[in-house]
Length: 67
Image (cartoon, rainbow, N blue to C red; front, side):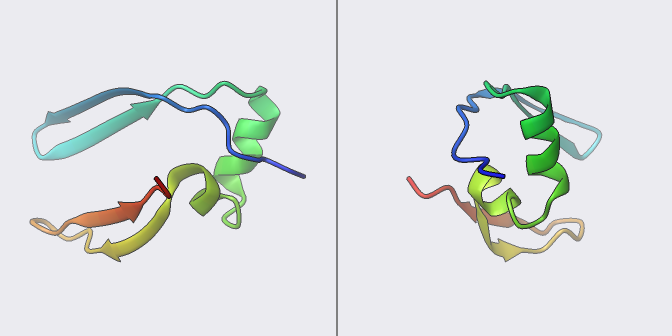
């Protein structure tokens, strides 16, 4: 399967009670999006390559989106 680089503009970012919610809008068929987010080998192509990741309270994440 070739997921390529779908168009995925950032739709929204919100924080409530210490939870960050990021929403993207994908311009791709549903099956392609599902495969892209459930097959770990495609995640870096779609969502970027994590460079630093500390998911503990107070931690942070740095992602390289290739731009």
